[in-house]
Length: 120
Image (tube, rainbow, N blue to C red; front, side, top):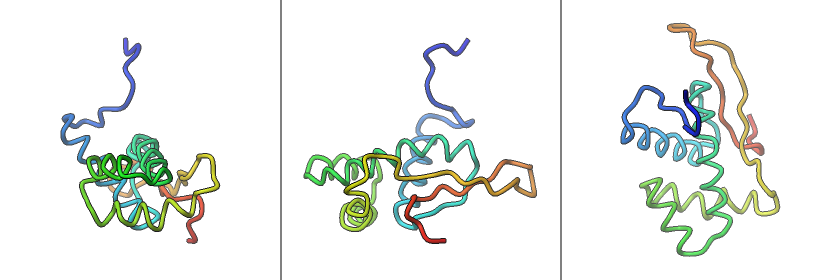
């Protein structure tokens, strides 16, 4: 039984999974929309929203926490200077998952993970 076992393993070691989440969250912040599998999108969405919440706080401790997770000064700078101010008056729900069908090779359900204010 998986009682009290939060989160998906995604067939990866914990270090690989943490790197995957950091890379996907950084790509979302950098590009505004990413194409990925549904399982990965559902796993990284809460993490990306937490990064935006840190950006909204805007203090030095929040910036250091974001750098520790995202591992990129450039992405964190964009988060704090461009992305977070766009959501300053929004109390949450900064991103959405849009289903786009299955992948040709393995029929994995593909989705767009994007910010709610993203213009397609």
